[in-house]
Image (cartoon, rainbow, N blue to C red; front, top):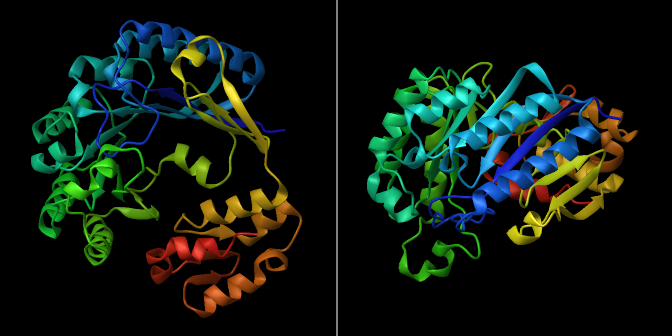
Length: 372
């Protein structure tokens, strides 16, 4: 039985759905925010009855746009978490922040409620690119939010950046990278736009000129070069940080730790069982929660150990594989490891196996080899 747990809380509401977003998010129906937060607190209270003895090491409040709703909801939510769960004194407690729905007062309330890490969804510092993405903020909002966050006492800030935006050039992307680096956040998540079915950009894809594959690769390499120049260490395929500022919550996901998801559409992984909450608001408000549970097989868990662990730049531990699964890694994956190592896609050093630089470039291809 586990001793430690991470908590994810989902706030689905936003002012307007971004054109690339396929998350469970939508503008709030009239009068529904209060009902939703009550249902969320009810689910959290039930979780406290079941998991309240476990130590919470990380908490992540995401969305949607948590900063869209009134700060009193977030403050009461944090109060309840601290009341019913065993929160570690040094827990990493994050909230996602949209510069278009944030002000100094909100940030001060969050900090006072115990939130100690802010994740700012910037995506770009180019206003034309932000408009194309359907963001509700501009670059001025971003700079104001960052300054307000520092003034409010946040000393652990992540900024999200996006590449391969339609119409984006190497020059405009480099400008965004360097501008964000000059701000000096502790963490930067830099990822390429993915065209997801059901999004505005997907449905209107014929109207936009998307980045070609070669330029996308150039942007990918530029990210590592520029961020490295400013002292950011890459620790996962799309994530960079200063020393000691890696996102502990996301590392739980990548290393197969246990996490509890609360709220609409939230997922959980507890004792090798994956749970998924309903994505239908009215069903959730009526008290219906987990609509799916799947016991992961031994092969499922081995695959996830490799898929997720190899996203980390340090790779996976062969000894940890044996401890978890009772088998030497070469009994299960010896052939693919030898093949990928021979091709220069993997590097094996002592106890660890990791993606090489060429392997990182084609990580999806490499990881597909670990399907059982």
